[in-house]
Length: 319
Ligand code: SF4
Ligand code: SF4
Image 1 (spheres, rainbow, N blue to C red):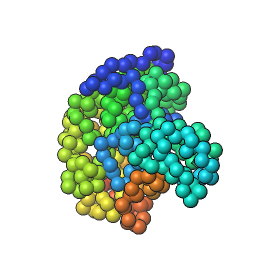
Image 2: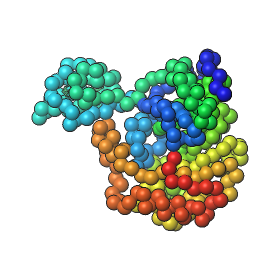
Image 3: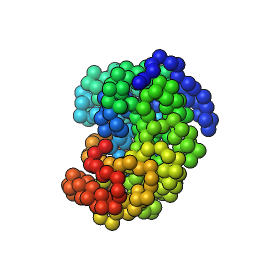
Image 4: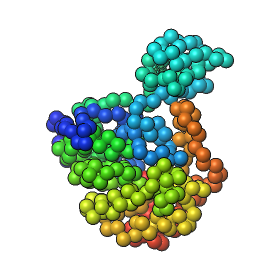
């Protein structure tokens, strides 16, 4: 049962202070990020840049400006508000020079049509724990808890550690959704305070992994082996992207990675959806280069059949 009302801890690790960090979302009553009813905390910043990312606003560590240009009525209020002189009116709408924008957010509250928002805000651990504690009753009733997601939680390792430690003090179940791309020392620190890992695997081939995410999978696979020996519960999560990693051979190779691991309790296959593409437009970042028109549901269901032939733990479609 949760024990609420304790003060949060702080400290330093690898030179980072853990008293505050940057989140881009806090989702209460989450049902797909671990067991039971959970509060999912989305930390900003990620060392990978997956082409299919459905939260592209998570990738940069700093707050970012998002723009819904179709809502702009051309009033010009944001132009006067911008201290960087980054906005000008062209063809009746406000155009923003992304190189000049500092992400200060001064243009957001003056916009009468909600055409602007900042993705990312600083949170103290104390404030975050106040938010988490609101739902202790639901965690207790459902065997739920909190999940650190992102982005990559280990990109703010000291902040992650402080949140996890505060939750442990309160007997709140903790899960960490990670891409596994971190120093082992960082993962180990977090592992001591984590009940369950949701460990993402994208591709078994190192060159293809680098092509798709910007980094090799070598460290990710090594860390998975070490975490398996560490003895924490692990649920593997695989995003199945049509035309990218969904051939029978590609899925089977991921199955071979999982087979033989003793701490893996389940494999969850995540269906591709296109929500990230619209967000990229609002962020002004290049559009996702994925062009396959294949059915995402068909791809994920075929992958489930292939994987279940290889691994002995349950394979499920969905988080
Ligand atoms: S976020 Fe700040 S710098 Fe960027 S456009 Fe808005 S007011 Fe200007
Ligand atoms: S304040 Fe909003 S509506 Fe007005 S010009 Fe700027 S973006 Fe457009």
